[in-house]
Length: 179
Image 1 (cartoon, rainbow, N blue to C red):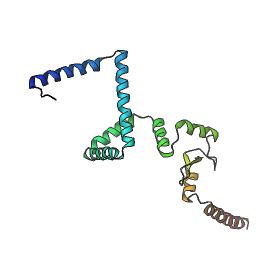
Image 2 (image 1 turned 90 degrees about the vertical axis):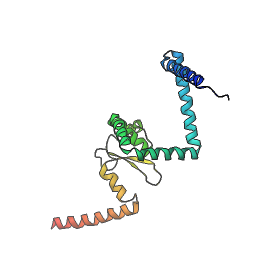
Image 3 (image 1 turned 135 degrees about the horizontal axis):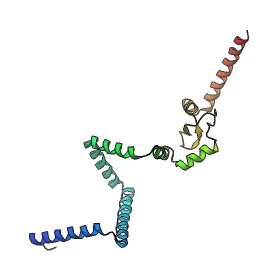
Image 4 (image 1 turned 180 degrees about the horizontal axis):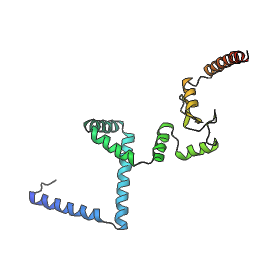
């Protein structure tokens, strides 16, 4: 590659700036289609590289972590601004997707299947119940029933012991009331 004189370098920069200015202003259908095609190609290539190359992914994550640590206030402000723009429904949809892998439409389908009521105590629905071992969604429960199952670690034998305990104490309570 031949070396450019300072005058030639300046001429090239000027030409490139003018070309990019025209390129950015090209609002014709052909120009828009070309821009979309280029952006789609770049995004696909970047995503593929990130997905398929663990070293590159680790490098990107490390760079992002360094930036986040160096700019905590800026990152927090940007997140707050971005999160604040989302509606409550979109926030809930993101939460469902990240926690349980289900869409808002699937959730609404389950709500209508259960009639909007807890599968155990028939109170108002509040939470998604899932198996902690394999992540499968079992149904929709109210907060108390979901926490109760969680406290028993989904152990049926332990729940049966609790039922027996409640039954034995309910019998003694009933005999005390009768006398």
